Length: 118
Image 1 (cartoon, rainbow, N blue to C red):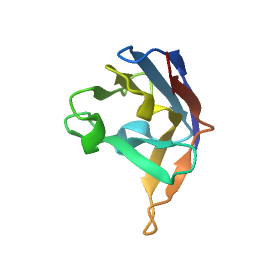
Image 2: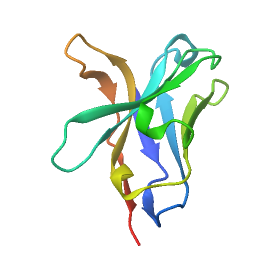
Image 3: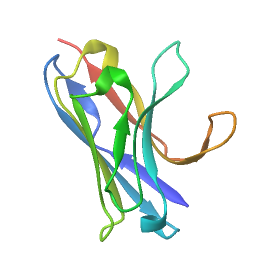
Image 4: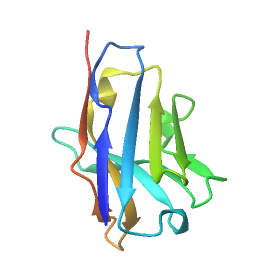
């Protein structure tokens, strides 16, 4: 399993970023995928998840209405469109496949840094 995130960077408050995750090494369409984030001094936080065929998605309350998760099973890609960014969205964002009983990822990528600052 390989997950490679991209698209992070510096954004101003109110701005947008679109994160991408390229997946390989498994039958992508068979698995739900998630995005999680790790902010300084905090634990890993689940942000959003999408089921295998893309028909269902959910979000943590703090990003509802601002972030949109999507996937392209033909390209083995999952995306996170982030709008109306806030400084508290600053974190390293990870693409995740699967979670264990301790809420730790089964597989995650190397992450992409998102910094929201004026």
